[in-house]
Length: 187
Image 1 (cartoon, rainbow, N blue to C red):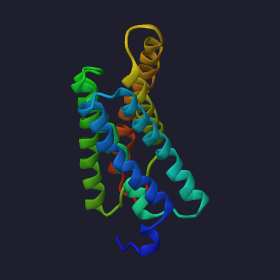
Image 2 (cartoon, one colour; image 1 turned 30 degrees about the horizontal axis):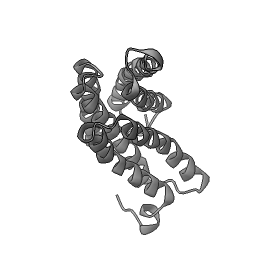
Image 3 (spheres, rainbow, N blue to C red; image 1 turned 45 degrees about the horizontal axis):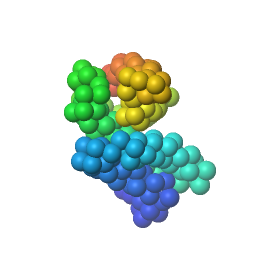
Image 4 (cartoon, rainbow, N blue to C red; image 1 turned 180 degrees about the horizontal axis):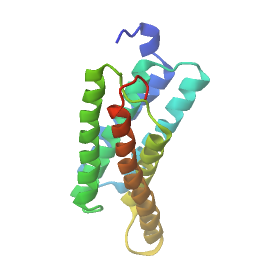
């Protein structure tokens, strides 16, 4: 891929880069400091910036191949890091993490198949965006959830987003697998 300087140094790519820095900050706040509020703020800002980097790219006509590749990669990293941290803290069961990681590993194989066939990379679909949206919004709620009072409401909201997110994550695995098995570009 031949990226020129203008494609690399854009406002949306800067937003994505700052968002990537949130991953180790979240892990440090949540696992190192045991500071749920700071971890919540970092995750929430990460989720919001995921929404805004694409909006800014389109509004400023700064869409790029680099941004299109970085954005979903950072999404995957956020989801994996957060799910691992939530499993470590016993907030979510291990099976949720296993499903998320298995799906991403499967799609990595499908991506290799697409590249071997010369049909490029996956274009993000609406279903894929919906899955990511649900997971990125589930986790901040789950950080603050407990079994009493308002925490119980957050627990229910978090698990509602997580349930939809995992279901949509699996649905996108089927969708992207179908796309990978097609023999035409952009299918």
